[in-house]
Amino acid sequence: MSQREGSLEDPQAESSISLLPHLEAKIRQTHSLARLLTRYAEQLLQEYVQHQGEPFGLPGFSPPRLPVAGLSAPAPGHAGLPVSERLRLDAAALAALPPLLDGVRRRQAELNPRAPRLLRRLEDAARQARALGAAVETVLAALGAATRGPRAEPAVPAAAPAAPGGFSAKVLGLRVCGLYGEWVSRTEGDLGQLVPGGPA
Image (spheres, rainbow, N blue to C red):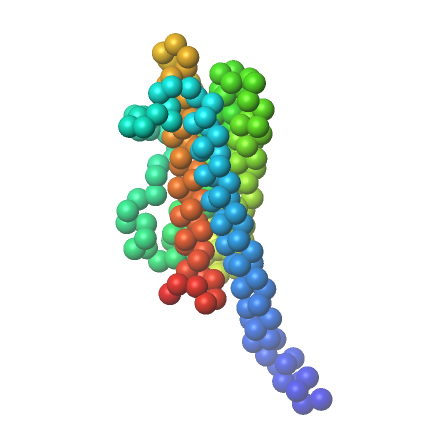
């Protein structure tokens, strides 16, 4: 009876204790999803390159690094930030990716209409980025470090005037697929810092 009375006197202590296993489970689940999507991102990039024709995929080919509206690569200083700030950056990037990936899919539907598996992978990648971003935001909220304010959806860049064969559109698509892989991998690493028993 006294134990029950004690728990009623301090309900916050009880709820914080019961929240911890739930939070750990959510972090592990989100980390596993990020690890899985890192592998999917590698497969997407390989498949994308296969369907672009030469010079894509040739040894020594170094495509220009076109800027992508609303999204940049993870900065080198990202690793030195507190984990909650890194996860905020990850969530923002993951929120920016779906419309960009949808834009790439639409361009590829014109350039490679006979590549249904690539188009499906691009569609899946947009959906997966959305799901991982939502899961990261849930972790942030549970940590008491929710993302700050609403974010505007980034504008999807219009297809640049392209050389025959849509070279610029292909290069831009390659860049978006690469950024998807970089941000998913970065998210996996950042979540790994929170996984119990993971790197300190």
